Amino acid sequence: MTGGLDLNARVDVARASSMDRLRTSWARLRRSALPIIQCAVGAALAWFFAHHVVGHPQPFFAPTAAVVSIGISFGARLRRSVELVVGVAVGIGIGDLFITHAGTGVWQIALVVAVAMAGAVFLDGGSIISMQAASSSVLVATLMPPSAGGGFSRMIDALIGGLVGVVVVAAIPLHPVRRAREQAAGVLEVMGKSLNDCADGLIEQNSDKIRTALAAARATQPQIDQLRSTLEGGREISRISPLYWNSRDRLERIRATADPLDNAVRNTRVLFRRSLTLVQDDEILDPRLIDVVEQLAKAVDVVRRMMLADPGEQPDQAEAARVLRSVAKNTRPELVDGAGLSAHVVFAQVRSMVVDLMQVCGMRRISAMALLPPTVARPHVKPEEE
Image 1: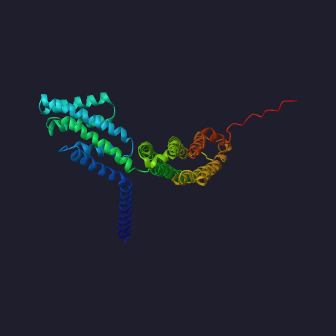
Image 2 (image 1 turned 90 degrees about the horizontal axis):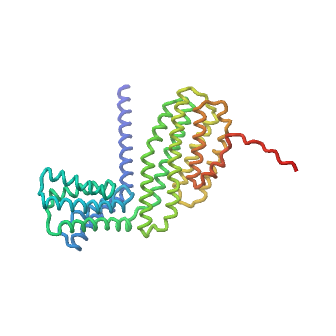
């Protein structure tokens, strides 16, 4: 009977895991729907212009250039377009030159790839330009024998594809602000939950819970890197798309939160590492400091909601700043009186995180630091005698 229950439990766990993966995959597809449409439309338009308007019979490089210049990573598209065009031009030129004078073969292919990549690296250090130069030279050297004006027409195809890609991004743009806000909120969500887990671990003296919180915080680094990439892509969209020219100020405000958010997550990791050491060493910790960690977790959730709200909604921003000021007021130095090194580090990291999160809310660093209680007693200065 027990075996049957265990089997049913495993089936339920497997079913739940499969549903979670399905939901994750579906969410990922929804997020990528617009870039997929952009790539599809860009490839078709690039082929149409190169084949029907310009008159090239097989404009292979036109749709390829459009897809690569649009991409699916949402960042630095104009640079990729330029690198692609330069890489194709270098690869085609070197490939045509080699097969015209040296023919095709094993050593010719090795040499043409080496020379094409060396030339591309000499012109620019970007990875796309060198890889595209190599692949283009291989295609020309193995599958596309030279013809009259062949190299020039292929260069035109790449240029058409790159330009079509830019036009498609401008005409069917991603929202330059919304995705960045969602990504920042996702990082804050993990941060808040991890702080709660850490607080529970400190209360229960459970190192496993703190270790889980640390692993979750460490796993946010790719999300932060993606946020920065999204912000760069959004900045580019706000420049080339007339639909979002009025979003530049909002985007710059979001961009200003990237560094403080990154710093807050890094400080969170330090807090978790030291909390783990504190529990493992059986160091005494004032329960009031654990309460402050829990308060900070709740404050992080308020900042997350602020991040998801439309920029400029003062009630959400004011609420987040109010909650953080309350946490700051509770970070008094007596919480670590007579405590060990780990407790002092946890205390210091909480204070640093409060400052970082206040900057995420738009406050200047010096103003945020001024809200923290002093850790050293200020000397009393007697008034001068009259």
